[in-house]
Amino acid sequence: GSEDKIIKIWDVATGRETRSLRGHESTVTSVAFSPDGKTLASASEDKIIKIWDVATGRETRSLRGHESTVTSVAFSQDGKTLASGSWDKTIKLWDVASGKETRSLRGHESAVNSVAFSPDGKTLASASADKTIKLWDVATGRETRSLRGHENSVNSVAFSPDGKTLASGSVGKTVKLWDVATGGETRSLRGHESTVNSVAFSPDGKTLASGSWDKTVKLWDVAAGRETRSLRGHESAVNSVAFSPDDKTLASGSWDMTVMLLPYSTEEFVITNWSSQAAKDEARYGLKLDGISLVPYTPAASKSKP
Image 1: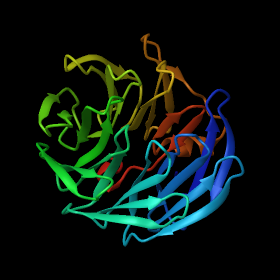
Image 2 (image 1 turned 180 degrees about the horizontal axis):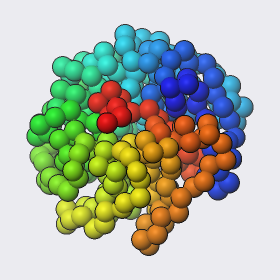
Image 3 (image 1 turned 60 degrees about the vertical axis):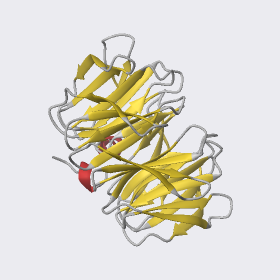
């Protein structure tokens, strides 16, 4: 997604743009693929969430209900429910098939920056500028835990593949790991020199990646809580990190208008050379790797360009 209001879909193998989706009236702030890859959801400063058919590029639904910028969208693992977070301090749950809002979750005292479903789809995590992370029971809409420990706005949350651990990244330069069952903080990972914008678990759950305004991507051993590698190459803030589903490649997107793909079992960066300036413009907002599609997104206000 981009400030130009356009969503672009790319083939990672070729670097070729396959679709350009138009319909939003303001900056596109977040995008997410459904688990089967057939549907794309997008969020925008226009307060609207749009649902797209990936194969045809056609907009199938427009979801309205938020009263301010929608910052984050995420699909449940069965693809039936979409969650959205907003500057209006709420999280909304939507039935994807009907487009109807099923719940509005209230409890945060400031903007919601990130939402993530647990692998079993029963729990939703939300990160907020109010310095907290909240866990919600998806079935009842009840807040089950409020995780406190960050001293600044929380920008990103991600569940481990087994659903037992939650990772969070903050303006306070730290990455924290939490026990989902107890809500207890298990580790505080320090090493970044500036805001942490994005966190992502590898598919095997053994490695955590974090991207920061300090221009680095760090890899962490989850079990040991130890930094294993600091990847340098970007010339500006790193806004997004994601592992490919086959667990072989790490993608990072930066304000320097580049996307870097790393075979993370080696120390060599492979820089993707995009064929158009438009692609470089998209890369400013970060890209997430999902199968053969590279998913760009715009950071929330707390992740704005330094």
